[in-house]
Amino acid sequence: MLGWAWNLLSRTRERFDQARLERRWTRLRELGMHIGNGVNLPASTWIDVAHCCLIRIEDNCGFGPECLILAHDAQMDEYIDSARIGRVIIHPSCHIGARTVILPGVEIGPRTVVGACSVVSQSLPPDTVCVGSPAKVVCSLEEYLAKHRERSKTRRSFPYELYKMEALTPERRAELVAAVADGDAYISGGHSAELRGEGGMQTTERDPHPTKK
Image 1 (cartoon, one colour):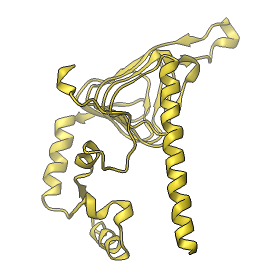
Image 2 (image 1 turned 120 degrees about the vertical axis):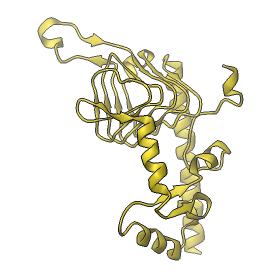
Image 3 (image 1 turned 90 degrees about the vertical axis):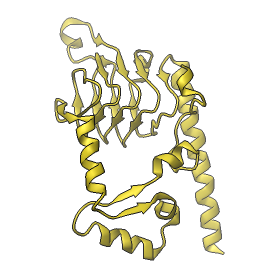
Image 4 (image 1 turned 60 degrees about the vertical axis):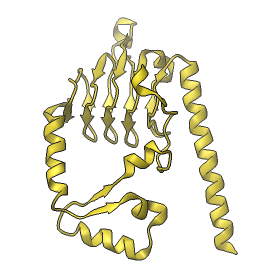
């Protein structure tokens, strides 16, 4: 009985969190911020609300937990009675790692991957992987993908549908733990599930005809 009540409470909380996140996206758009389709913009992403009309996030971008997006810099305000503002443009299909800080006056991508805990203080070119403080190019996107394609041929791979969080049994958890004991493993099919609307990640609405833009 207690388990049933706990599951009901968890589902109710999840629906509440989803609704609250959607209201946040709506409010940011009302304030002038552009948020494209298929964007994963978690509640933990800190947005410079006072200047969010200067921030543009294009389609299919994703953010890890606790990222920070700034469109103003007031560090000199005490001395010159002025604060700097600048636009932030994150082009399509960029993926920003957890706790990354994005400063005003930069453009990222398209198709740029930014490593976790990076500080983006200058614009980053398309089709690259960038890390560090300040974030700099470490390789091309194709080099990065080729490395993982090759590695995935020799490492264990698990289907998303059977190994997503809500499907994990104790036995499957043990399999995952064993698989990464001597290196990385892969979960395959998660993005395809997201495109079908079956994934666990909450994104903004997706454009049903993306090629017609």
